[in-house]
Length: 239
Image (tube, rainbow, N blue to C red; front, side, top):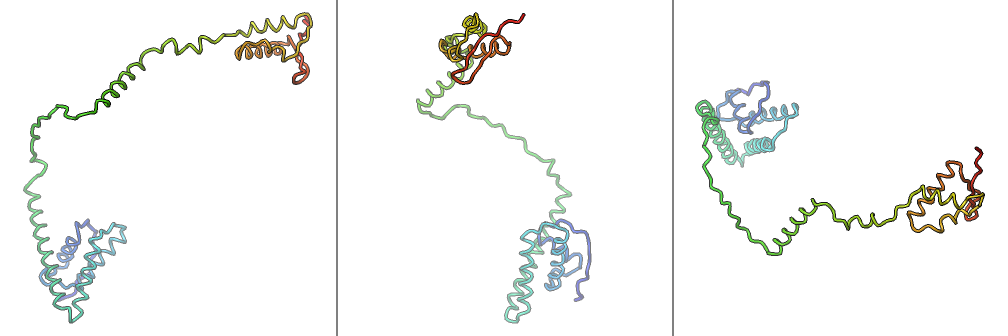
């Protein structure tokens, strides 16, 4: 039998190794009942190499078929394994013939039937809407309390929520400015720390501190010294 001629063509997408083998057999007009494994293996490996050169993903089943062909070829070269090689060759031939018949039938069916035309109408289904689950009574109570709590979050807060804000005494900075000016009237000098001794709380302390800052900023009083020895006195009005 003449050797298989070399050929090049655009690589299609093969559905599997059997599809590739049938393509090679058809291209080279090989008798499917008398396959020359060595020559078919050479063409098969060339196609695998072309797939690699074109950066195509090679499925493991293609590599498995390559190993199978190599094994059959090796068995044919050994005299003690001739019967095994012939059996493997007949098995491969049978698979190729079966696959070829399936491919021909699928091709004919594709021209006859349109699978997008035939469909089945959905059968009416009656759903049972009865709630059949059972729950522990404590879970139901927790669910009810949780639902009621979500409803209460939409209500305005009670008056007790503002008690901590409303009960605090609001101290005016202006009133503290007047109080500091009275203590410094007629050139009297006062220690800086003494201005805060009469404070009744944190708000009173802050208001006093802001009052002193405003007076210093307005150049109405002056602070001399550092630390506990600092003294505050009123500046004379030059107007």
